[in-house]
Length: 325
Image 1 (spheres, one colour):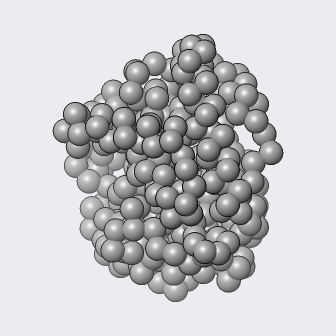
Image 2 (cartoon, rainbow, N blue to C red):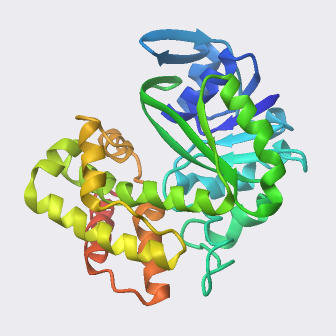
């Protein structure tokens, strides 16, 4: 299978490197220092303690990238509209598109309950660029259960986890699922195929934890075990998660676990750095729209009071302004 990968940060390098090792033709869309590193040194990946460098096709020309059979989109979610405008030469009606990003995706309301069903997600998809560029019956949504970090441009380091949840975002996309699951499983990933409804719920469940730990870690500069060891911050995160659980029920994504259940899962991971803390340390923009501001906007559309979420959203909005973004 000819596979295109756009967004060669830590996750993109991990996915591309494992698919290269499985023998697929992988084409990378990159720019700047990342493109130079890939062309000069190949794709460098540290996986299970072993570092490899594999020659890979890398370009900043969308026409040279495709067309591809499978397009993996692995940037921060705020970069997706720009990629949607750039990558049309890589896509045909036979291309399956898989965004692998944190937070609420642009397709999330396509199968949501009334009154939001089919609504636009202009906060994360200004001008509906993604919606127009990527037909929903060609899109498979995802939830990634893994951690990695960027050692240097073109060099990703896998830390833990090997899980991918994949599923159609509308019923018409279901026939595309099995071939993509087969590709990832053959490359050694643990894949969980999902229905439209179960995928939406898994997306919200992951967001339920990320929407507190990611921003708070970026704000404070500490790992999640330190955050949750403070009783006041733990109570604050719990209050936000209670609000997000109520919002999830209204969106057709009920959560059965308690916030304390999720805190225990987070603590079991140890002193790891969230992706948002890594971005803050590197001086990159934070993925706040998809993880925090869009959920806040959805609550307001539904008339739900979310004062704790509002407080964190406002804090992080000012924090980003103070960082110059």
